[in-house]
Length: 485
Image (cartoon, rainbow, N blue to C red; front, side):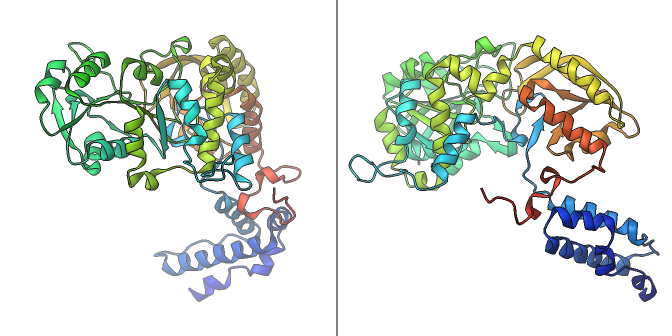
C-alpha cells in the first residue's frame, strides 16, 4: 500500500498544472491549496481502505479532477434556479419569485436601521405589524391584521389563542395533509385545541356543525382543500351558512383559505380560488392565508379579521416565536402596495405576470429557443411542443394551464443524465422528464431569463472557455478584490 501512496503527486506538483493554475487565477490561492490537500487526503483514505487495487490517475488527469471537485464543492446548496418545471408555485424551488419593488424594499430596509417597532412621529414603541396592517385592512376590508412566519404558523397561533383547551369543529373532509407531512389534526393538537370532526369525507351538512356545538366549543373552522378535490356525491356548508350559525351561537368562524388570493384570479384561468376580502365580506371572523403563494410575496402567514380577536392573537406568547423580521415586512409591504392597482399588480407581481402570459407568446418563445438548443452537442433534437402546466404541485395541483415547452432529446446520454447536467448549469436549469424527453416549460420561465437559460446550457456544452468569468467561479471562493457590495 505504501508503494501506491508514493505515486500520489505532491501538492506543489499539482499546483503547477494548467488546470489548477487557471483555477488559481479565478479564485483565492489559499482555497485552491486547501482544496488540493483535502482531495489528496480523501484519496489516501480511500486507497488505504479499498478492498482491491485502485488506479491513480496521472498528474494531469488528477489535476483536472481536483479542479472540477473544488468548483463543485464550492457551489452553495442554495443557488439561483431557472424554473422550467411548469409548476409556478414549486415548493422545492421557493414558490413565488419576488417583484422588483419587493427586492428594492428589502435592500433599502436591511442595509441599515429601520423603524421596525418605533413610531417616528411620537418616538414611542409601536407594533411591527403596522408596516403592513393598513395595506392589509384596505385590501381585505378587515378590521385588523397580523403577520407570522407562514400559514402553518398562522393556524397554530390562531388556534392556540382562540381555542386553546377547547374544541374546534371542522368537517372531516377538510382534515388536510400538505407537503412535509403537515397535518391539520397535528397542528390542532400542538395548539392545545381539541379537534371535533363532523360529517363524512364527501358530505358534511350545516346540521352536522349545529349538532356538534356544546359547552366546550370555541370556534367553527373551514379549511380550503387546495391540494385535492373530491368530486361526485359531495356536499359542504357554504361560508355564509357557517357565519350565520356562528352568529346564532356566539362562536367565531375561522376561514383558512390556504394559498389565498387578494384578487379574483378567474381572469388568469384559475377557478374557485378563495379571495381573502370575499371571506371577510361574507362575515368570517378570522381569515388565514399564505403570503408567498397566490399573493406572490415573501414567505409568511397572514391573519386578518375582527380587531378583538386579532389583538387576542397578537398578545399570545407564541406570537413572539412566530413573528417575522424587517426584511419580510418590507417585501410584503412593497408587494401589497402593487395590489392597490390590480392592473399594476398583474404586470409587476411575477406570479401574475407568468399567469397572464398568453399561450401564443409562449409558443413563439419556444420556437425561437428550440433551434438554439438543438445546436448544442449534447442535444440530438429540440422542438417546441404544447403541453399543460400547473399552478402548484403540493398546493393547488388541480389548476391546469396551457403552456409551450422546448422538448430536448439527448444525443449521447440518458434523459436522466441530461436533466442532471442541466441542473449543474449556471444558473441551474430545472425541467421535467416526460416520455424520454426533458421538457423546459416556459410557463414558469420569465421571458427575461430566456437568454440566461441558453447561455447556461451553452457553457455547459463547452466547458473549456477562453477565459473564466466570475459567473462560473464558486461563490464562496470569489477573488478577494471583488466588491463587497
